Image: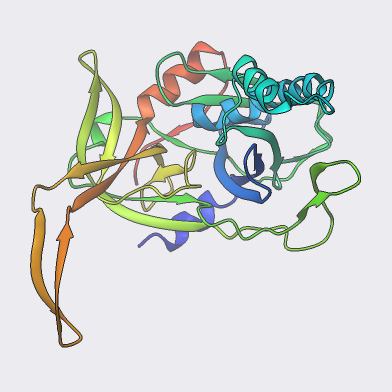
Length: 297
């Protein structure tokens, strides 16, 4: 059903790789997100929550370096623990706070000199412009649904993204005390499609802004395109909603491997939430960015 469409979509859909180090942890945590290109001029769209990580990466690290610099003054102070707590409060650093975020755009463009990022004011949508690059590493571009009346309940669609990070080209550098990318290890993460039907439209202030899908969007698919069997874009994967089904089983007796046990279960239905195609097109239009439309065959 989606074989040809995925081959088309894969030409301009790309992963963003992240490596993150947290304040209370020593491990490097890999992560992925997705973007797709809307024209031949280096403009792509992704989720606002993804773009914010890119925008704030430097300021997060600068804040941590300032914290470390002040804390260093109290290294031989008997009140070090107290000073650490005070500085953690001052710099808003908690155990689960990221202190270093590095990102890498995979096979997007070569040797870009800068980025311009536009965040949508209300929706989980952002535009990324790669500036002053040497060459494109993507082919073709998105074609958005021209007539959004085609976005109907029951329509069978697919999403493509990069939800399972398999890249290993990173390390912790003991000499610099920092994480870094390397030229060794696996550098790619395979794409992963997931299908489903449109279940509901999502509204905001009497306006349709989103599309709900019968299957969840997976972590790392955020920013990936939602498309039909012709490869026409209907929206962009944003998040997953968890709908409580109400079929709760509390302390119920069941037999497992011949043994009676008491179990509880609180089932939820995980559904995907996508940014509507009209929202994407309108934002591109507001920023005077060229995009392309198509009708289903």
